[in-house]
Amino acid sequence: HLRVELAERDRAQQEMMKEWEVWKERDSALTALVKENKDYISQLKEALESSRRDVQALSDSLIGRGLEGSGAEAGLVNQLREKEALLAASFRDREELSTSMLQEISRLSSALTDAESIIL
Image (cartoon, rainbow, N blue to C red; front, side, top):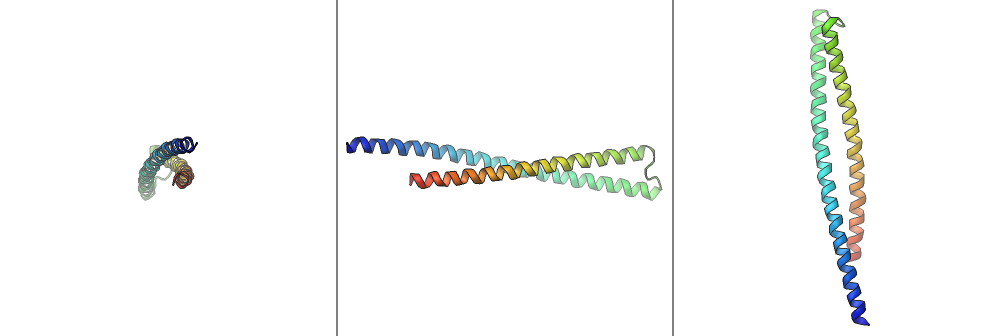
């Protein structure tokens, strides 16, 4: 009777250890994904800032020449502003995704901690 119970406990412990390993792998994968997202967000921020500088420089140039809102220059300004708006929207989307991923990692870390406390 005790041997059977001991064997069952060993099997249960092995299953929990396997599950714990799976949770660790998921946690590592999510951590890597969050890092990728942060890197991507950083790139988007840099692109957005570059776009803002381009728009400002072009705007300053046009204003300096008294051509604000005229012809091809206005088209370029509008294109740069559209690019800036798209980059800003993409940045917001990535921020939301990053926040969501951080919440998921937190949830999985808690589950991993709970599983670890049960194993030990």
